Amino acid sequence: SAVRKLRFRAVHEVDGDWARQLEGTPLGVAEVMAGDVQVDIAPLTGALADLRVVVVSADSIFLQARMRLAAIMCVLAGLLPYGVVLGAVVYLVMRNRAIERRYKQRYGGDLKEAQTAAAA
Image (cartoon, rainbow, N blue to C red; front, top):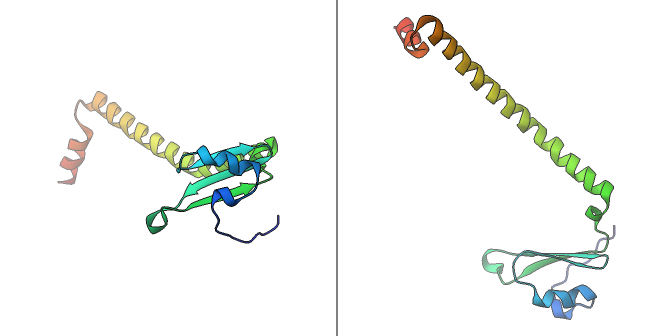
Protein backbone atom coordinates (compact mmCIF):
# COMPACT_ATOMS: atom_id res chain seq x y z
CA SER A 1 0.00 0.00 0.00
CA ALA A 2 1.33 3.38 -0.99
CA VAL A 3 1.59 6.28 1.43
CA ARG A 4 -0.07 9.44 0.19
CA LYS A 5 0.21 13.10 1.14
CA LEU A 6 -2.40 14.66 3.39
CA ARG A 7 -4.13 17.58 1.68
CA PHE A 8 -7.00 19.77 2.82
CA ARG A 9 -9.52 20.38 0.06
CA ALA A 10 -13.25 20.88 -0.32
CA VAL A 11 -15.07 17.79 -1.54
CA HIS A 12 -16.26 19.50 -4.73
CA GLU A 13 -12.60 20.20 -5.64
CA VAL A 14 -11.83 16.48 -5.78
CA ASP A 15 -12.25 14.72 -9.08
CA GLY A 16 -13.83 11.30 -8.98
CA ASP A 17 -17.26 9.76 -9.26
CA TRP A 18 -17.53 9.38 -5.50
CA ALA A 19 -17.08 13.14 -4.91
CA ARG A 20 -20.32 13.91 -6.78
CA GLN A 21 -22.18 11.41 -4.60
CA LEU A 22 -21.05 13.18 -1.40
CA GLU A 23 -22.80 16.47 -2.20
CA GLY A 24 -26.16 15.23 -0.90
CA THR A 25 -24.92 13.31 2.13
CA PRO A 26 -25.47 14.66 5.65
CA LEU A 27 -22.51 16.03 7.58
CA GLY A 28 -22.38 13.13 10.02
CA VAL A 29 -20.63 9.79 9.66
CA ALA A 30 -21.23 8.27 6.23
CA GLU A 31 -20.02 5.49 4.00
CA VAL A 32 -20.39 5.73 0.24
CA MET A 33 -19.67 3.01 -2.29
CA ALA A 34 -18.94 4.18 -5.84
CA GLY A 35 -17.97 1.21 -7.94
CA ASP A 36 -14.79 -0.25 -6.46
CA VAL A 37 -14.16 2.80 -4.28
CA GLN A 38 -15.22 3.00 -0.65
CA VAL A 39 -15.42 6.45 0.93
CA ASP A 40 -15.70 6.84 4.71
CA ILE A 41 -16.55 10.22 6.21
CA ALA A 42 -16.18 11.12 9.89
CA PRO A 43 -16.64 14.54 11.52
CA LEU A 44 -14.01 16.02 13.79
CA THR A 45 -14.96 17.36 17.22
CA GLY A 46 -14.29 20.47 19.23
CA ALA A 47 -12.85 23.52 17.49
CA LEU A 48 -12.48 21.51 14.26
CA ALA A 49 -16.16 20.51 14.09
CA ASP A 50 -16.53 22.16 10.67
CA LEU A 51 -14.00 19.73 9.15
CA ARG A 52 -14.53 16.13 8.06
CA VAL A 53 -12.04 13.31 7.59
CA VAL A 54 -12.60 11.64 4.23
CA VAL A 55 -10.84 8.32 3.65
CA VAL A 56 -10.95 6.98 0.12
CA SER A 57 -10.06 3.33 -0.34
CA ALA A 58 -9.81 1.82 -3.79
CA ASP A 59 -9.39 -1.73 -2.43
CA SER A 60 -11.88 -2.35 0.32
CA ILE A 61 -10.52 -5.41 2.08
CA PHE A 62 -13.78 -5.99 3.95
CA LEU A 63 -15.58 -6.66 0.68
CA GLN A 64 -13.53 -9.82 0.28
CA ALA A 65 -15.07 -12.79 2.07
CA ARG A 66 -11.79 -14.17 3.47
CA MET A 67 -10.73 -10.83 4.93
CA ARG A 68 -14.18 -10.29 6.44
CA LEU A 69 -14.02 -13.74 8.03
CA ALA A 70 -10.51 -13.03 9.37
CA ALA A 71 -11.70 -9.73 10.87
CA ILE A 72 -14.67 -11.43 12.56
CA MET A 73 -12.42 -14.17 13.93
CA CYS A 74 -10.00 -11.56 15.35
CA VAL A 75 -12.85 -9.77 17.11
CA LEU A 76 -14.15 -13.04 18.55
CA ALA A 77 -10.67 -14.04 19.70
CA GLY A 78 -10.32 -10.67 21.41
CA LEU A 79 -13.66 -11.10 23.19
CA LEU A 80 -12.93 -14.67 24.32
CA PRO A 81 -11.22 -13.78 27.64
CA TYR A 82 -14.19 -11.60 28.61
CA GLY A 83 -16.54 -14.49 27.88
CA VAL A 84 -14.46 -16.82 30.07
CA VAL A 85 -14.50 -14.33 32.96
CA LEU A 86 -18.24 -13.77 32.58
CA GLY A 87 -18.85 -17.52 32.56
CA ALA A 88 -16.77 -17.97 35.72
CA VAL A 89 -18.69 -15.20 37.50
CA VAL A 90 -22.04 -16.70 36.52
CA TYR A 91 -20.87 -20.14 37.67
CA LEU A 92 -19.71 -18.84 41.06
CA VAL A 93 -22.93 -16.90 41.67
CA MET A 94 -25.06 -19.93 40.76
CA ARG A 95 -22.91 -22.17 42.97
CA ASN A 96 -23.23 -19.79 45.92
CA ARG A 97 -27.02 -19.67 45.53
CA ALA A 98 -27.16 -23.48 45.41
CA ILE A 99 -25.10 -23.73 48.61
CA GLU A 100 -27.40 -21.27 50.38
CA ARG A 101 -30.50 -23.16 49.18
CA ARG A 102 -29.06 -26.48 50.35
CA TYR A 103 -28.18 -25.03 53.77
CA LYS A 104 -31.66 -23.59 54.14
CA GLN A 105 -33.23 -26.98 53.28
CA ARG A 106 -31.02 -28.94 55.70
CA TYR A 107 -30.91 -26.60 58.67
CA GLY A 108 -33.96 -24.39 58.11
CA GLY A 109 -32.06 -21.16 58.67
CA ASP A 110 -30.22 -18.53 56.72
CA LEU A 111 -26.56 -19.27 55.95
CA LYS A 112 -25.48 -15.64 56.44
CA GLU A 113 -27.06 -15.53 59.89
CA ALA A 114 -25.24 -18.73 60.85
CA GLN A 115 -21.94 -17.35 59.58
CA THR A 116 -22.31 -14.11 61.55
CA ALA A 117 -23.33 -16.07 64.66
CA ALA A 118 -20.30 -18.37 64.31
CA ALA A 119 -17.99 -15.40 63.85
CA ALA A 120 -19.26 -13.68 67.01
